[in-house]
Image (spheres, rainbow, N blue to C red):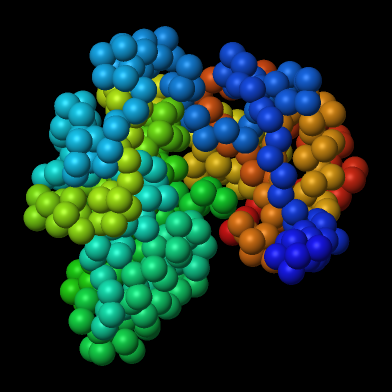
Length: 387
């Protein structure tokens, strides 16, 4: 066996022993929120399609029409020939929704974060990052070559102390957080972080991937100069974006490496996003449904009221989360176990994502199964919520 194979095999063996190995499982999406996995039809509570728009007839029709008009691929990066005409309409729409001067669409949320951060800060700069921020924010911070420091989750006092101690030695400072945290479902203190950043001439970047399209409007967002988000969650398709001032967006479009050196999105993805935004605008009540359904769930289990459509149940060791996921699968539910390094050691969990497409009766049945089956298996651990 070659040394590379020996290395890979040893790593995989260690992950297996720790119950941390990941495997891809073929999963066909049926009439949302149902999926087909291992020959079984399961009701999914693990999908981020919060409004069910990935299968909306108008959204699919827009994607098909764009494919027929422009083809299946962009053909090149946006700065070469891949900037098809639909981009301008989508960026104008996103900027208007976010109350900014301009926007830039990327191939994905991950590409947006690793591109934006590196285009704005580098050597001699400082990044202050919430320690539970998404992996792509950590990756972008480290790729930038700036000094990176983390502050305790949602702890504005700790962030302030770091700024007081290190702002003077740094040319620029970028403060980075999520609006809604993807694994815990809690919300960042945006108003406090924005005020702190302004007081220290720092720039605040907020990743709104899991808030855009499903959370009530927060007036404090207007104080955030760098508003990032995705088109793959509530919007139901694919892609990422940054909304900011015109000068910042102009700089991003000429300096963000993940934009410059990536092929543009397929025209179908851009057209689908525009159609999805039309659906959201035409039905103001739709956006509130995922949060309402998450709160039905937390109320049924006696948990603290959900802050977002994401509700975690912490189980501790990875083996417990895997076992709990298997129990729910046997009852007809797909709830994927979330394990380190996605979450900190000792906090493996089930992560429930609620959609407007979930029936209230199915949520009640899910809560009943958890009460009967998981409480018996894991006791009080099944009722702990990430904090």
